[in-house]
Image 1: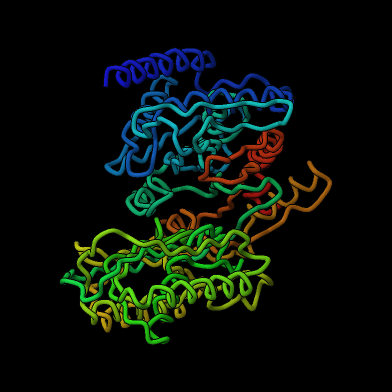
Image 2: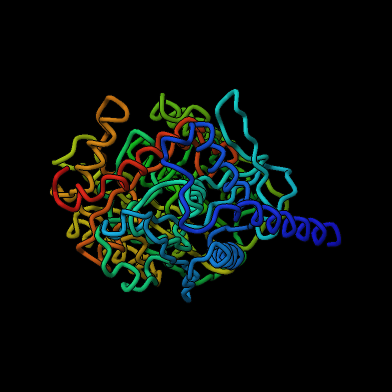
Length: 526
Protein backbone atom coordinates (compact mmCIF):
# COMPACT_ATOMS: atom_id res chain seq x y z
CA UNK A 1 0.00 0.00 0.00
CA UNK A 2 2.81 2.40 0.90
CA UNK A 3 4.68 1.70 -2.31
CA UNK A 4 1.52 2.21 -4.36
CA UNK A 5 0.88 5.57 -2.70
CA UNK A 6 4.40 6.82 -3.44
CA UNK A 7 4.08 5.70 -7.05
CA UNK A 8 0.77 7.52 -7.47
CA UNK A 9 2.23 10.68 -5.88
CA UNK A 10 5.20 10.65 -8.24
CA UNK A 11 2.86 10.20 -11.22
CA UNK A 12 0.89 13.26 -10.13
CA UNK A 13 4.07 15.32 -9.74
CA UNK A 14 5.29 14.29 -13.18
CA UNK A 15 1.95 15.18 -14.75
CA UNK A 16 2.09 18.66 -13.18
CA UNK A 17 5.64 19.23 -14.41
CA UNK A 18 4.84 18.08 -17.93
CA UNK A 19 1.74 20.24 -18.00
CA UNK A 20 3.83 23.28 -17.20
CA UNK A 21 6.24 22.45 -19.99
CA UNK A 22 3.46 22.07 -22.56
CA UNK A 23 1.80 25.36 -21.67
CA UNK A 24 4.70 27.33 -23.11
CA UNK A 25 2.74 28.05 -26.30
CA UNK A 26 -0.17 30.41 -25.57
CA UNK A 27 -3.68 29.40 -26.55
CA UNK A 28 -4.54 30.14 -30.16
CA UNK A 29 -0.96 31.08 -31.05
CA UNK A 30 0.49 29.49 -34.17
CA UNK A 31 4.23 28.87 -34.35
CA UNK A 32 4.40 29.22 -38.12
CA UNK A 33 2.70 27.19 -40.82
CA UNK A 34 2.54 23.42 -40.53
CA UNK A 35 5.11 23.27 -43.31
CA UNK A 36 7.59 24.88 -40.90
CA UNK A 37 7.41 21.78 -38.68
CA UNK A 38 9.52 18.85 -39.78
CA UNK A 39 8.27 15.28 -39.57
CA UNK A 40 10.48 14.84 -36.50
CA UNK A 41 8.92 17.92 -34.89
CA UNK A 42 5.41 16.61 -35.48
CA UNK A 43 6.28 13.21 -34.03
CA UNK A 44 7.78 14.95 -30.99
CA UNK A 45 4.60 17.03 -30.48
CA UNK A 46 2.46 13.93 -30.42
CA UNK A 47 4.76 11.66 -28.40
CA UNK A 48 5.24 14.37 -25.76
CA UNK A 49 1.49 14.70 -25.36
CA UNK A 50 1.07 10.92 -25.37
CA UNK A 51 3.62 10.78 -22.56
CA UNK A 52 1.63 13.36 -20.65
CA UNK A 53 -1.77 11.68 -20.87
CA UNK A 54 -0.20 8.26 -20.27
CA UNK A 55 0.53 9.41 -16.72
CA UNK A 56 -3.22 9.55 -16.06
CA UNK A 57 -5.16 6.26 -15.64
CA UNK A 58 -8.09 6.06 -18.08
CA UNK A 59 -9.65 2.60 -18.42
CA UNK A 60 -13.24 2.54 -19.68
CA UNK A 61 -15.79 3.33 -16.96
CA UNK A 62 -13.06 5.00 -14.89
CA UNK A 63 -12.48 8.29 -16.70
CA UNK A 64 -12.75 10.60 -13.68
CA UNK A 65 -9.01 11.36 -13.56
CA UNK A 66 -8.43 11.85 -17.29
CA UNK A 67 -11.58 13.95 -17.67
CA UNK A 68 -10.49 16.20 -14.81
CA UNK A 69 -7.00 16.39 -16.26
CA UNK A 70 -8.24 17.43 -19.72
CA UNK A 71 -10.58 19.99 -18.20
CA UNK A 72 -7.80 21.54 -16.12
CA UNK A 73 -5.39 21.41 -19.03
CA UNK A 74 -7.82 23.30 -21.28
CA UNK A 75 -8.39 25.93 -18.58
CA UNK A 76 -4.65 26.45 -18.15
CA UNK A 77 -4.39 26.91 -21.91
CA UNK A 78 -6.89 29.74 -21.68
CA UNK A 79 -9.94 27.94 -23.05
CA UNK A 80 -13.35 27.55 -21.40
CA UNK A 81 -14.03 23.81 -21.26
CA UNK A 82 -17.37 22.22 -20.47
CA UNK A 83 -17.47 18.91 -18.59
CA UNK A 84 -20.87 17.22 -18.63
CA UNK A 85 -22.36 14.62 -16.28
CA UNK A 86 -20.95 11.77 -18.41
CA UNK A 87 -17.47 13.39 -18.02
CA UNK A 88 -17.29 14.30 -21.71
CA UNK A 89 -15.17 17.40 -22.31
CA UNK A 90 -15.77 20.12 -24.91
CA UNK A 91 -13.98 23.40 -25.62
CA UNK A 92 -13.61 25.86 -28.49
CA UNK A 93 -10.32 27.11 -29.96
CA UNK A 94 -10.32 30.54 -31.63
CA UNK A 95 -9.46 30.66 -35.32
CA UNK A 96 -6.04 31.60 -36.60
CA UNK A 97 -5.95 35.22 -37.73
CA UNK A 98 -7.44 35.55 -41.21
CA UNK A 99 -9.42 32.28 -40.94
CA UNK A 100 -12.24 33.49 -38.69
CA UNK A 101 -14.87 33.07 -41.42
CA UNK A 102 -14.16 29.39 -42.00
CA UNK A 103 -16.98 26.98 -41.06
CA UNK A 104 -16.95 25.47 -37.58
CA UNK A 105 -15.07 22.18 -37.49
CA UNK A 106 -15.12 19.59 -34.70
CA UNK A 107 -12.12 17.40 -33.98
CA UNK A 108 -13.22 14.45 -31.86
CA UNK A 109 -11.74 11.48 -30.04
CA UNK A 110 -12.38 9.45 -26.91
CA UNK A 111 -10.46 9.54 -23.64
CA UNK A 112 -10.91 5.96 -22.41
CA UNK A 113 -8.70 3.01 -23.33
CA UNK A 114 -8.75 -0.76 -23.15
CA UNK A 115 -6.16 -1.87 -20.59
CA UNK A 116 -4.36 -5.14 -21.29
CA UNK A 117 -1.60 -6.32 -18.94
CA UNK A 118 1.09 -8.94 -19.48
CA UNK A 119 0.95 -12.02 -17.28
CA UNK A 120 2.94 -11.47 -14.11
CA UNK A 121 3.26 -7.69 -14.45
CA UNK A 122 2.48 -5.69 -11.31
CA UNK A 123 0.13 -3.05 -12.68
CA UNK A 124 -2.94 -1.33 -11.27
CA UNK A 125 -4.93 0.18 -14.18
CA UNK A 126 -6.71 2.58 -11.81
CA UNK A 127 -3.51 3.97 -10.33
CA UNK A 128 -0.41 3.27 -12.40
CA UNK A 129 0.84 5.21 -15.44
CA UNK A 130 1.48 3.62 -18.82
CA UNK A 131 5.22 3.43 -19.53
CA UNK A 132 5.92 4.34 -23.16
CA UNK A 133 8.76 2.86 -25.20
CA UNK A 134 9.86 4.95 -28.17
CA UNK A 135 12.06 3.15 -30.69
CA UNK A 136 13.18 5.62 -33.35
CA UNK A 137 15.16 2.98 -35.21
CA UNK A 138 12.09 0.78 -35.59
CA UNK A 139 9.83 3.82 -35.89
CA UNK A 140 7.43 2.60 -33.20
CA UNK A 141 5.82 3.60 -29.95
CA UNK A 142 4.80 0.76 -27.62
CA UNK A 143 4.25 0.26 -23.90
CA UNK A 144 6.07 -1.71 -21.24
CA UNK A 145 3.93 -4.78 -20.52
CA UNK A 146 0.57 -3.11 -21.12
CA UNK A 147 -1.57 -1.87 -23.95
CA UNK A 148 -0.37 1.48 -25.28
CA UNK A 149 -3.66 3.36 -25.36
CA UNK A 150 -2.97 4.90 -28.78
CA UNK A 151 -6.62 4.04 -29.34
CA UNK A 152 -7.49 6.80 -28.79
CA UNK A 153 -4.59 8.51 -27.06
CA UNK A 154 -3.07 9.45 -30.40
CA UNK A 155 -6.17 11.52 -31.15
CA UNK A 156 -5.91 13.32 -27.80
CA UNK A 157 -2.21 14.02 -28.39
CA UNK A 158 -2.83 15.45 -31.87
CA UNK A 159 -5.75 17.62 -30.71
CA UNK A 160 -3.70 18.92 -27.79
CA UNK A 161 -0.85 19.88 -30.15
CA UNK A 162 -3.27 21.73 -32.42
CA UNK A 163 -4.71 23.50 -29.38
CA UNK A 164 -1.14 24.49 -28.45
CA UNK A 165 -0.91 26.45 -31.70
CA UNK A 166 1.00 24.05 -33.93
CA UNK A 167 -1.43 24.29 -36.88
CA UNK A 168 -3.42 26.98 -38.74
CA UNK A 169 -7.19 26.55 -38.60
CA UNK A 170 -10.59 28.19 -38.62
CA UNK A 171 -12.97 28.00 -35.64
CA UNK A 172 -12.40 24.65 -33.94
CA UNK A 173 -14.29 22.70 -31.33
CA UNK A 174 -12.65 19.83 -29.47
CA UNK A 175 -14.95 17.07 -28.17
CA UNK A 176 -13.51 14.23 -26.10
CA UNK A 177 -15.93 11.50 -25.05
CA UNK A 178 -15.98 8.76 -22.42
CA UNK A 179 -16.69 5.03 -22.52
CA UNK A 180 -16.28 4.59 -26.27
CA UNK A 181 -14.66 1.20 -25.89
CA UNK A 182 -17.43 -0.45 -23.88
CA UNK A 183 -20.86 0.98 -24.57
CA UNK A 184 -20.42 4.52 -25.98
CA UNK A 185 -22.29 5.96 -23.01
CA UNK A 186 -20.37 9.20 -23.42
CA UNK A 187 -21.68 9.80 -26.94
CA UNK A 188 -25.17 8.59 -26.02
CA UNK A 189 -25.25 11.07 -23.12
CA UNK A 190 -23.82 14.03 -25.04
CA UNK A 191 -26.00 17.09 -25.57
CA UNK A 192 -26.99 17.95 -29.12
CA UNK A 193 -26.03 21.54 -28.24
CA UNK A 194 -22.38 20.55 -28.62
CA UNK A 195 -23.00 19.93 -32.32
CA UNK A 196 -25.24 22.93 -32.92
CA UNK A 197 -23.86 25.07 -35.75
CA UNK A 198 -21.22 22.48 -36.60
CA UNK A 199 -20.67 21.99 -40.32
CA UNK A 200 -17.95 19.34 -40.32
CA UNK A 201 -16.49 16.76 -37.95
CA UNK A 202 -13.31 14.70 -38.09
CA UNK A 203 -13.31 11.66 -35.85
CA UNK A 204 -9.70 10.62 -35.18
CA UNK A 205 -10.33 7.01 -34.27
CA UNK A 206 -9.38 4.98 -37.33
CA UNK A 207 -6.26 2.80 -37.32
CA UNK A 208 -4.92 3.06 -40.86
CA UNK A 209 -3.34 6.21 -42.32
CA UNK A 210 -4.20 5.40 -45.94
CA UNK A 211 -7.93 5.05 -45.21
CA UNK A 212 -10.83 7.39 -44.73
CA UNK A 213 -13.73 5.72 -42.97
CA UNK A 214 -17.19 6.86 -44.09
CA UNK A 215 -19.74 4.40 -42.70
CA UNK A 216 -20.23 2.08 -39.73
CA UNK A 217 -22.91 -0.33 -38.52
CA UNK A 218 -25.41 -0.26 -35.70
CA UNK A 219 -24.71 -2.51 -32.74
CA UNK A 220 -26.83 -3.99 -29.98
CA UNK A 221 -25.99 -6.40 -27.19
CA UNK A 222 -28.54 -8.99 -26.11
CA UNK A 223 -27.87 -9.89 -22.48
CA UNK A 224 -29.63 -12.46 -20.35
CA UNK A 225 -29.59 -14.28 -17.04
CA UNK A 226 -31.08 -17.47 -15.62
CA UNK A 227 -31.56 -18.89 -12.14
CA UNK A 228 -29.37 -21.51 -10.49
CA UNK A 229 -30.89 -24.84 -9.43
CA UNK A 230 -27.95 -26.81 -8.07
CA UNK A 231 -28.39 -30.37 -6.78
CA UNK A 232 -26.35 -33.41 -5.86
CA UNK A 233 -24.77 -35.27 -8.78
CA UNK A 234 -25.60 -38.90 -9.54
CA UNK A 235 -22.25 -39.61 -11.26
CA UNK A 236 -19.03 -40.50 -9.47
CA UNK A 237 -16.28 -38.79 -11.53
CA UNK A 238 -15.81 -35.06 -12.14
CA UNK A 239 -14.01 -33.80 -15.24
CA UNK A 240 -12.78 -30.40 -16.38
CA UNK A 241 -12.97 -29.96 -20.14
CA UNK A 242 -11.33 -26.95 -21.78
CA UNK A 243 -11.07 -25.60 -25.30
CA UNK A 244 -8.41 -22.93 -25.84
CA UNK A 245 -5.56 -21.67 -27.97
CA UNK A 246 -7.98 -19.86 -30.29
CA UNK A 247 -7.30 -16.56 -32.05
CA UNK A 248 -10.51 -14.78 -31.08
CA UNK A 249 -10.55 -11.13 -32.06
CA UNK A 250 -12.90 -8.19 -32.41
CA UNK A 251 -16.39 -9.32 -33.34
CA UNK A 252 -16.66 -6.56 -35.91
CA UNK A 253 -13.18 -6.50 -37.43
CA UNK A 254 -12.48 -10.26 -37.38
CA UNK A 255 -15.95 -11.79 -37.59
CA UNK A 256 -15.42 -12.61 -41.28
CA UNK A 257 -12.22 -14.57 -40.63
CA UNK A 258 -14.16 -17.77 -39.84
CA UNK A 259 -12.51 -18.21 -36.46
CA UNK A 260 -13.82 -20.72 -33.93
CA UNK A 261 -15.92 -19.35 -31.09
CA UNK A 262 -14.61 -21.07 -27.94
CA UNK A 263 -17.99 -21.06 -26.20
CA UNK A 264 -19.82 -22.61 -29.12
CA UNK A 265 -17.00 -25.06 -29.78
CA UNK A 266 -17.08 -26.44 -26.24
CA UNK A 267 -20.87 -26.52 -26.15
CA UNK A 268 -20.77 -28.56 -29.36
CA UNK A 269 -18.72 -31.23 -27.64
CA UNK A 270 -21.14 -31.44 -24.71
CA UNK A 271 -23.99 -31.85 -27.17
CA UNK A 272 -22.03 -34.60 -28.91
CA UNK A 273 -21.59 -36.47 -25.61
CA UNK A 274 -25.37 -36.56 -25.28
CA UNK A 275 -25.76 -37.72 -28.88
CA UNK A 276 -23.26 -40.53 -28.24
CA UNK A 277 -25.24 -41.73 -25.24
CA UNK A 278 -22.83 -40.50 -22.56
CA UNK A 279 -24.73 -39.35 -19.48
CA UNK A 280 -23.13 -36.17 -18.12
CA UNK A 281 -24.19 -33.57 -15.61
CA UNK A 282 -23.07 -29.95 -15.82
CA UNK A 283 -21.53 -28.29 -12.77
CA UNK A 284 -20.10 -25.10 -14.34
CA UNK A 285 -19.39 -23.42 -17.67
CA UNK A 286 -17.38 -20.28 -18.40
CA UNK A 287 -16.31 -18.72 -21.66
CA UNK A 288 -15.66 -15.30 -23.16
CA UNK A 289 -14.77 -11.90 -21.72
CA UNK A 290 -16.85 -9.33 -23.63
CA UNK A 291 -19.87 -9.25 -25.90
CA UNK A 292 -17.84 -7.77 -28.76
CA UNK A 293 -14.89 -10.18 -28.51
CA UNK A 294 -14.81 -13.65 -30.11
CA UNK A 295 -14.11 -16.04 -27.20
CA UNK A 296 -10.61 -17.50 -27.29
CA UNK A 297 -11.36 -20.21 -24.75
CA UNK A 298 -14.04 -21.89 -22.64
CA UNK A 299 -13.96 -24.35 -19.76
CA UNK A 300 -16.60 -26.50 -18.08
CA UNK A 301 -16.94 -29.02 -15.27
CA UNK A 302 -19.09 -32.11 -15.73
CA UNK A 303 -19.82 -35.22 -13.73
CA UNK A 304 -20.01 -38.65 -15.41
CA UNK A 305 -19.98 -42.32 -14.52
CA UNK A 306 -16.35 -43.39 -14.08
CA UNK A 307 -17.00 -46.28 -16.45
CA UNK A 308 -17.36 -43.74 -19.31
CA UNK A 309 -14.03 -42.00 -18.65
CA UNK A 310 -12.11 -43.71 -21.46
CA UNK A 311 -14.93 -43.18 -23.93
CA UNK A 312 -15.05 -39.47 -23.12
CA UNK A 313 -11.29 -39.22 -23.68
CA UNK A 314 -11.55 -40.95 -27.05
CA UNK A 315 -14.43 -38.69 -28.12
CA UNK A 316 -12.45 -35.63 -27.02
CA UNK A 317 -9.43 -36.63 -29.08
CA UNK A 318 -11.62 -37.27 -32.09
CA UNK A 319 -13.40 -33.94 -31.60
CA UNK A 320 -10.09 -32.06 -31.45
CA UNK A 321 -8.89 -33.78 -34.62
CA UNK A 322 -12.06 -32.74 -36.45
CA UNK A 323 -11.76 -29.16 -35.21
CA UNK A 324 -8.16 -29.02 -36.42
CA UNK A 325 -9.25 -30.32 -39.80
CA UNK A 326 -12.27 -28.03 -40.09
CA UNK A 327 -10.27 -24.94 -39.07
CA UNK A 328 -7.04 -25.75 -40.88
CA UNK A 329 -5.36 -22.51 -41.96
CA UNK A 330 -7.60 -20.51 -39.61
CA UNK A 331 -6.87 -21.82 -36.11
CA UNK A 332 -3.40 -23.28 -35.69
CA UNK A 333 -3.26 -23.59 -31.90
CA UNK A 334 -6.39 -25.50 -30.88
CA UNK A 335 -6.04 -27.10 -27.45
CA UNK A 336 -8.71 -29.49 -26.22
CA UNK A 337 -8.07 -31.09 -22.85
CA UNK A 338 -9.88 -33.35 -20.38
CA UNK A 339 -8.70 -33.49 -16.76
CA UNK A 340 -10.03 -35.30 -13.72
CA UNK A 341 -11.12 -33.24 -10.71
CA UNK A 342 -11.09 -34.13 -7.05
CA UNK A 343 -14.46 -34.42 -5.36
CA UNK A 344 -17.92 -34.28 -6.85
CA UNK A 345 -19.37 -30.77 -7.24
CA UNK A 346 -23.10 -30.00 -7.24
CA UNK A 347 -24.68 -29.91 -10.70
CA UNK A 348 -27.60 -28.17 -12.40
CA UNK A 349 -30.83 -29.91 -13.33
CA UNK A 350 -31.04 -31.74 -16.63
CA UNK A 351 -33.53 -29.11 -17.85
CA UNK A 352 -31.08 -26.29 -17.13
CA UNK A 353 -28.27 -28.24 -18.77
CA UNK A 354 -30.33 -28.93 -21.89
CA UNK A 355 -31.38 -25.28 -22.12
CA UNK A 356 -27.80 -24.07 -21.84
CA UNK A 357 -26.57 -26.41 -24.57
CA UNK A 358 -29.51 -25.55 -26.80
CA UNK A 359 -28.89 -21.82 -26.42
CA UNK A 360 -25.16 -22.03 -27.11
CA UNK A 361 -25.51 -24.31 -30.13
CA UNK A 362 -28.58 -22.71 -31.73
CA UNK A 363 -27.75 -19.01 -31.27
CA UNK A 364 -26.88 -17.21 -34.51
CA UNK A 365 -23.12 -16.68 -34.55
CA UNK A 366 -20.69 -15.32 -37.11
CA UNK A 367 -21.44 -13.64 -40.43
CA UNK A 368 -25.13 -13.70 -41.33
CA UNK A 369 -25.20 -11.64 -44.55
CA UNK A 370 -22.71 -9.85 -46.81
CA UNK A 371 -23.24 -6.45 -48.41
CA UNK A 372 -24.54 -6.46 -51.97
CA UNK A 373 -23.27 -2.91 -52.52
CA UNK A 374 -19.67 -3.10 -51.26
CA UNK A 375 -17.58 -6.17 -52.03
CA UNK A 376 -16.14 -7.90 -48.98
CA UNK A 377 -18.14 -5.88 -46.43
CA UNK A 378 -20.05 -7.82 -43.80
CA UNK A 379 -23.65 -6.63 -43.73
CA UNK A 380 -24.85 -8.36 -40.57
CA UNK A 381 -23.35 -10.62 -37.92
CA UNK A 382 -23.74 -11.88 -34.39
CA UNK A 383 -21.25 -12.95 -31.75
CA UNK A 384 -21.89 -14.97 -28.59
CA UNK A 385 -19.25 -13.24 -26.51
CA UNK A 386 -20.00 -14.52 -23.01
CA UNK A 387 -21.70 -17.53 -21.47
CA UNK A 388 -21.32 -18.52 -17.82
CA UNK A 389 -23.11 -20.97 -15.57
CA UNK A 390 -22.39 -21.72 -11.91
CA UNK A 391 -24.08 -21.87 -8.53
CA UNK A 392 -25.06 -18.19 -8.86
CA UNK A 393 -26.94 -18.77 -12.11
CA UNK A 394 -26.31 -18.39 -15.82
CA UNK A 395 -25.54 -15.31 -17.90
CA UNK A 396 -24.83 -14.55 -21.53
CA UNK A 397 -24.08 -11.59 -23.79
CA UNK A 398 -24.17 -11.38 -27.57
CA UNK A 399 -23.25 -8.56 -29.94
CA UNK A 400 -25.51 -8.07 -32.98
CA UNK A 401 -24.40 -5.82 -35.84
CA UNK A 402 -26.02 -4.75 -39.09
CA UNK A 403 -26.15 -1.79 -41.44
CA UNK A 404 -29.71 -2.81 -42.39
CA UNK A 405 -32.28 -1.94 -39.72
CA UNK A 406 -34.68 -4.76 -40.64
CA UNK A 407 -31.96 -7.40 -40.38
CA UNK A 408 -30.84 -6.00 -37.04
CA UNK A 409 -34.38 -6.22 -35.71
CA UNK A 410 -34.90 -9.76 -37.02
CA UNK A 411 -31.69 -11.06 -35.43
CA UNK A 412 -32.45 -9.45 -32.09
CA UNK A 413 -36.02 -10.79 -32.08
CA UNK A 414 -34.75 -14.30 -32.85
CA UNK A 415 -32.26 -14.16 -29.98
CA UNK A 416 -34.85 -12.85 -27.55
CA UNK A 417 -37.22 -15.66 -28.55
CA UNK A 418 -34.53 -18.32 -28.13
CA UNK A 419 -33.58 -16.86 -24.74
CA UNK A 420 -37.19 -16.97 -23.58
CA UNK A 421 -37.61 -20.57 -24.75
CA UNK A 422 -34.47 -21.49 -22.81
CA UNK A 423 -35.74 -19.85 -19.63
CA UNK A 424 -33.58 -16.73 -19.65
CA UNK A 425 -34.64 -13.18 -18.91
CA UNK A 426 -33.06 -11.02 -21.59
CA UNK A 427 -32.76 -7.37 -22.52
CA UNK A 428 -31.33 -5.37 -25.42
CA UNK A 429 -28.61 -2.80 -24.78
CA UNK A 430 -27.83 -0.28 -27.52
CA UNK A 431 -24.11 -0.23 -28.28
CA UNK A 432 -23.81 1.90 -31.44
CA UNK A 433 -25.94 3.84 -33.90
CA UNK A 434 -25.55 3.30 -37.64
CA UNK A 435 -23.57 5.83 -39.65
CA UNK A 436 -24.82 5.63 -43.25
CA UNK A 437 -22.55 6.50 -46.18
CA UNK A 438 -23.11 9.96 -47.67
CA UNK A 439 -22.13 9.91 -51.35
CA UNK A 440 -22.55 13.72 -51.47
CA UNK A 441 -20.09 14.40 -48.63
CA UNK A 442 -18.07 17.53 -49.41
CA UNK A 443 -15.67 16.74 -46.60
CA UNK A 444 -14.91 13.36 -48.16
CA UNK A 445 -14.34 14.95 -51.56
CA UNK A 446 -11.95 17.50 -50.06
CA UNK A 447 -10.12 14.80 -48.09
CA UNK A 448 -9.62 12.70 -51.21
CA UNK A 449 -8.17 15.68 -53.09
CA UNK A 450 -5.83 16.67 -50.26
CA UNK A 451 -4.62 13.09 -49.75
CA UNK A 452 -3.97 12.70 -53.50
CA UNK A 453 -1.97 15.93 -53.67
CA UNK A 454 0.08 15.05 -50.59
CA UNK A 455 0.76 11.38 -51.29
CA UNK A 456 0.50 10.95 -55.05
CA UNK A 457 -2.10 8.21 -54.73
CA UNK A 458 -5.76 7.71 -53.90
CA UNK A 459 -6.90 7.27 -50.32
CA UNK A 460 -8.90 4.12 -49.62
CA UNK A 461 -12.53 4.98 -48.89
CA UNK A 462 -13.88 2.27 -46.60
CA UNK A 463 -16.91 1.24 -44.59
CA UNK A 464 -16.52 -1.06 -41.61
CA UNK A 465 -18.55 -3.61 -39.70
CA UNK A 466 -17.97 -1.92 -36.36
CA UNK A 467 -19.62 0.95 -34.53
CA UNK A 468 -18.20 4.43 -34.08
CA UNK A 469 -19.49 7.44 -32.23
CA UNK A 470 -20.14 9.09 -35.61
CA UNK A 471 -23.43 7.19 -35.82
CA UNK A 472 -24.66 8.88 -32.65
CA UNK A 473 -23.36 12.27 -33.76
CA UNK A 474 -25.40 11.84 -36.93
CA UNK A 475 -28.45 11.23 -34.76
CA UNK A 476 -27.75 14.40 -32.77
CA UNK A 477 -27.21 16.54 -35.88
CA UNK A 478 -28.10 14.92 -39.22
CA UNK A 479 -26.51 17.85 -41.11
CA UNK A 480 -22.97 17.28 -39.86
CA UNK A 481 -20.61 16.10 -42.60
CA UNK A 482 -18.15 13.56 -41.09
CA UNK A 483 -15.15 11.38 -41.80
CA UNK A 484 -12.96 9.19 -39.57
CA UNK A 485 -9.18 9.00 -40.01
CA UNK A 486 -6.21 7.98 -37.89
CA UNK A 487 -2.57 6.85 -37.72
CA UNK A 488 -1.28 3.32 -38.28
CA UNK A 489 -1.94 1.23 -35.16
CA UNK A 490 -1.33 -2.51 -34.89
CA UNK A 491 -2.71 -4.91 -32.26
CA UNK A 492 -4.84 -2.32 -30.48
CA UNK A 493 -6.16 -3.37 -27.05
CA UNK A 494 -3.30 -5.84 -26.52
CA UNK A 495 0.11 -5.76 -24.85
CA UNK A 496 1.58 -5.71 -28.38
CA UNK A 497 -0.21 -2.50 -29.37
CA UNK A 498 2.05 -0.46 -31.64
CA UNK A 499 1.78 3.09 -32.99
CA UNK A 500 3.86 3.57 -36.13
CA UNK A 501 5.57 6.95 -35.82
CA UNK A 502 5.94 7.62 -39.56
CA UNK A 503 2.17 7.69 -39.92
CA UNK A 504 1.82 10.61 -37.50
CA UNK A 505 3.19 13.34 -39.84
CA UNK A 506 1.16 11.81 -42.66
CA UNK A 507 -2.04 12.13 -40.65
CA UNK A 508 -1.02 15.53 -39.30
CA UNK A 509 -0.48 16.90 -42.80
CA UNK A 510 -3.83 15.53 -43.97
CA UNK A 511 -5.65 17.25 -41.12
CA UNK A 512 -3.69 20.45 -41.77
CA UNK A 513 -4.60 20.32 -45.44
CA UNK A 514 -8.27 19.82 -44.68
CA UNK A 515 -8.37 22.66 -42.15
CA UNK A 516 -6.45 24.99 -44.46
CA UNK A 517 -8.84 24.39 -47.39
CA UNK A 518 -12.09 24.05 -45.48
CA UNK A 519 -13.55 27.13 -47.18
CA UNK A 520 -13.33 25.28 -50.49
CA UNK A 521 -15.26 22.44 -48.91
CA UNK A 522 -17.89 24.86 -47.62
CA UNK A 523 -18.29 26.45 -51.04
CA UNK A 524 -18.44 23.08 -52.77
CA UNK A 525 -15.32 23.87 -54.79
CA UNK A 526 -13.47 20.72 -53.76
